[in-house]
Length: 133
Image (cartoon, rainbow, N blue to C red):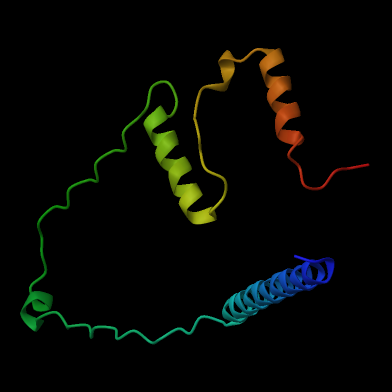
């Protein structure tokens, strides 16, 4: 292979690489514009058929009920605060509604030392996207 043939071969390879790069860039551009167009569309709300209310029979309205009504059951009382199962359920519900970061662990905060708290605070603040300067 002579020098001229090597240079021609190199230009062919560079040409193929440039064409493939432009094709990849075009595909990425098309995907981004398609997804942004989909995101800009407002969701269309379709009307939902509401079932008609069936009126109560006239006989039931004419004869009043004199039976005593039972008192509602009292709410359960927790002796030492809220149980951890309830806290976990509420945290999961808040996560499902808010769509925030995943809840990794729920624990009692009274058993931490100052060193642990300061270390976690420094670690979490290092992930802040906006830094105060």
